[in-house]
Amino acid sequence: MQPIKWLVDFIDVRLGVKDLFTRELQGYLLPRNVNVWYTLGAVLMALFSLQILTGILLLMFYVPDSEKAFASVQYIVNDVPYGWLFRMLHAIGANVIVIALLMHMLSVLFMGSYKGRREFTWLTGFIIFNLTMGLCLTGYLLPWSQLSFWATTVATDAAGAIPVVGDYLVEFLRGGSTVGNQTLGRFFALHVVGMPLVLLGLIGVHLFCVKRRGISSPPFGTGYRISEELPFFEHEKHPGGIPFFPNYFVKDAAVICFFLAFMLAIIFYAPGMFFPEAAFQPADPFLTPPHIKPEWYFLWAYQTLKIFPSEIIGLGVQGAFMTFLALLPFIDRGPERRPAKRPLFVTCYVLGILLFVAISIWGHYS
Amino acid sequence: MIRSLCCMFVLVIAACWSVPATLLAADDTVCIQCHGGLDGRLAAPVAEWRTSIHAANSISCHDCHGGDPTDFAMAMSPERGFIGVPEYTEVPDFCGRCHVGVAAEYKAGAHGKAIEKGGAQCVVCHGNHSVQRASLSLINEESCSRCHPYERAALIKLSLVETDTIVKGVEQDIDRLYRLGFAVDEMKGSLFNQRNRFHSIFHEVDVERVRQETAGVQSELGKISKQVAAIDSTLGERKLWGSVVIGLFILVGVIFLLVRKAYEEEEKG
Image (cartoon, rainbow over all chains, first blue to last red; front, top):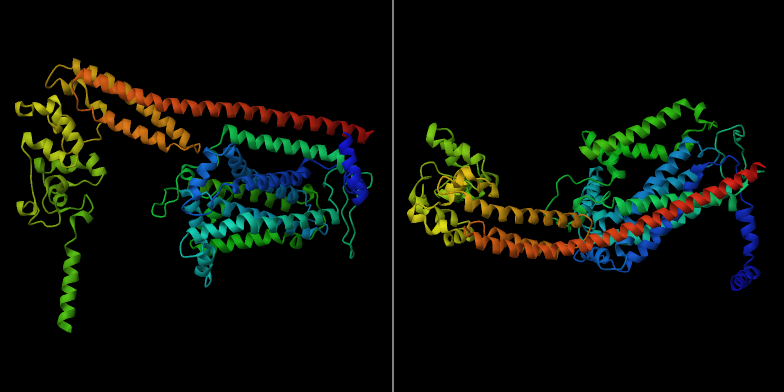
């Protein structure tokens, strides 16, 4: 223990880390009625860290060339020691991240945590969600399988429905008229450098917003109070609250452990859950596989495009819905956060979730 | 100028009209159109053919019988290669134009050698227009007993069915590993070779030779099965260690929750 104590003291004398730790972690007080849903932010940070780690390991062997990409993934899975594990953690981890993100967003919506001058927190979180979807889309192409190739072809093709600029946009996304080596190159660059850099920056801004404005209290119990609409900045404090470290940190750690156990359970007991047969066939631009479907989290968008008589209407509806969601804190200005006192919102919330599930199931079986 | 344009137009129309036989849909030939509209014996082949493996693979009348499937008048003209119905002894060569390997195996077997004395040829067992995908069910007492006692055929079928079951099992195993992302190309290639070797004895009627060959195929399939078993063993180990890690994560998670519970009591106090 002596060398560790010496090292901590060495750093502390120079950077004052002990004081920082006491002030920012032990002195960071959370509301006394904070619930389990508040752990999802920490879960997401852990899962994103795992994506970066496994991504770096995959990057050591992956070759971003349409002639070699599929073989390089085969090599990783079959020949690289524990390569199969890194690949599964990365691919299935992406799906678990989407699940955690949806849970995080839905809990924030239900508890009205976007209210009380937290528009920036919501907005940065919403962009993080969309960026994650972008990371999923760009990462989907990299294995260069039949699934990758055709799912990307269908996804990029949808942009062509936009009037005037549609065709240019498709060509811009693909780097040519069809999905090919040039598409793989730009998706690879975006997936491993561009988007992660922006994502890291946005996570930083999001955390800053949470910390600076102060964490919101759950709108339940006797301690609930409506936050006033003040014309000046005020940090929401929780006097008499519980310290983040170690009191709440252990709950974060517990939920992180359960999420990791859930992810590993899929890897070891249902590894094919997110991999249809086309995911194991190399891309063939001359052979369209039957029943090609996007990942489960894009099924709602895929089916929406099919419901409407023209793709442009479908795109318009999707755009309107996403814009509404992004601007929700600016639209829903009422100070009330208790779900029982917001019947209209809760009804829309439940119907929205049911609609999302129903359209996704419809998309899966259509 | 006008004349040359007219000539070009006529040439284009003529070119479009004389569609090459290979581009025709299998059931869109003049053979089908004419025979399909007839009654009785001359119409029967059309209905039978529609149920066949040939129809499923777009092999149409003219592919076997020759002739011109695009021209009503010349459809059955020998000038356009029409063969018509072959003689009994000509059938193996008739089918063997496509099924080259099978024809050679048949000719080398007892059935092929006895054809001049009325030995069974292709259509005796497989049927003609309603031909189905070849399977071991073609060897059955009812069919074989038409010409000879069934006992020997039954022994041959026993060996073939046993091997066929193993082939199908290995095929399923390889497919299962493929769906898990394993590189199975080598095993697939090996299985392909053994399946072909196995199919090559389907027209053999020497019981001992069938037994020897199926034993050889089974031995080679056994090697593939060993590779599959080795991968399955690795998968089992992974699952075991995975279960241990999952259990550890759950245990650590529960411990953290218990610690949190202790903090909660402390916070209340």
